[in-house]
Image (tube, rainbow, N blue to C red; front, side, top):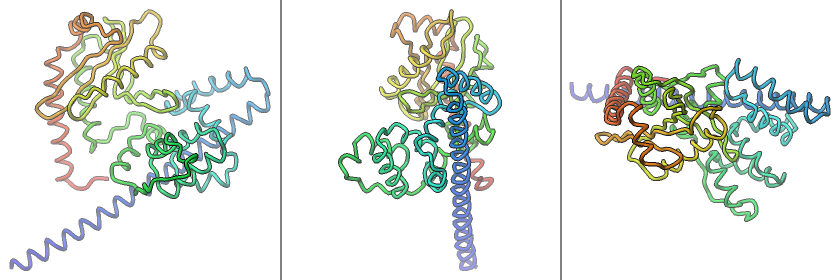
Length: 343
């Protein structure tokens, strides 16, 4: 009898492993197919706008038409079609003009790869990085690292071949460009711990009242050519300022403060409306049993920070909610694992 149970368990384990492999392969194929369609669409959009501007031959018309179509496209299809990104599409079509070359490349390079490549000024250097990225399966981060270390000029490449890991797959499905293209503007991955906690915090803050108005989640900011995404953005009516919220899993690190200051400066420059005060930021650090909430303002004034807390939900209450949100999110993920391996 024990031999039969052992054999059954072994067969069950083999079956489960095979099914997991099939699901992971399906996920990877889905990422490749959506990325291919997304990037080709962006190329055709850039090409179409370039042709329109070229036919008119007036620089002022070019600026006006991009802003006009962007406003309408954002309303209908999401933030991926903001003016800055439309200009990226135009650069993409200009720097990679041959669709016969672009078509096979988009099965190997993502849109974020092409965004990084746009910053490479020399044609031969750009082609070098395209080839190396395709051959070595570089992530966007690795591509940026190789450009920064001037791999083309040094003609030396580190052996950094990578396969598409589960973490990379998860990030692909969280990519705002990816979600916008599929029409999932408010997309959440229920099997993603960070997203689940953010959702809990968002609902808690809105339920608390205290003058909060929801503005955006995963707010995209383009800083020095790179994309950054702020977890949550609110407006506080009484404080008359934007409130940026960022979630971090683990202990508070000094680098988180610098990142938030970068976000606040960007919001102050591009999002603050007339009559509003400078933005403030809340960093939620979700470490089991030691949750922490840090408040930052641009003026670095401790007295002002204390005054902000009189209008915001109490710090201890936010930390308690962060603690419960972490537990609830983990429990939901465990329940999903018990219910089945979910695509």
